[in-house]
Length: 268
Image (cartoon, rainbow, N blue to C red; front, side):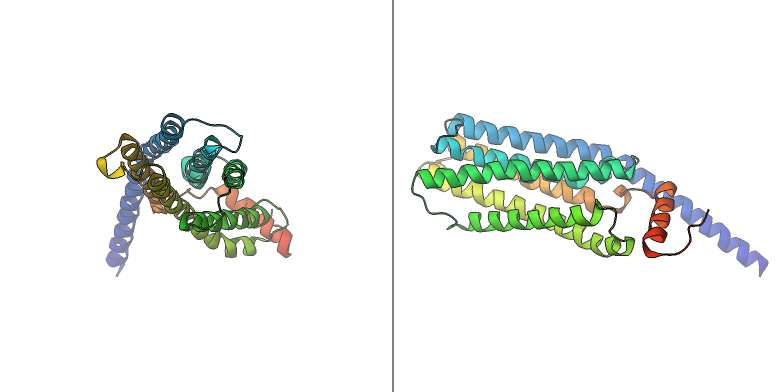
């Protein structure tokens, strides 16, 4: 009997060591995935800038087509690149104080909101100046739905995770929903951008698109890079070994916070 117990304990220790090694080996590859995501994200923003700047005539704020060009650049920068980075901050800064990472997460989302508003105002002003109807395409419907849900997600996250009077059990209840909808909205943003790329190409170069026009090739490349960036962000966020490891001091603070907000004595 004693021999069986010792053998079971030994096997348990071996399994724990193997699991820890696999976790460490998996986490060691995280910087490569993060670097790849940043290359894809920056390249997507640059390609969008080149597309609108070189092929579509540049940028302005005068109701012309150059004002429209502000829209895709802002949306790719905000709703794709910065949004993706905001989602990944808890993986990138795995060992930093959680409060600091939470503030960075919120600041990045605020930048996403601010830049997106600029992009949306630009396209609405362009439509008004050129007597173009608003909100008639699938791209515009998906885009507005994504933006409205993003605002709701941002407000709920701000209330639940940055206000100190929110109870621990309420945060725990909402956290899985926050993570799910955040990643889902990011995927919806990528899909909306792909719809926008296709719509712009059909409007701008419908006669030469099938002849492998350089603008079409550049835009198609942008779409592939946006899709790859979205897949890479989703992979980093959902992989278990990339998740933020538990920190004893944060767990202690959580227990004290829960005790203070829900009643009871604080243990020394």
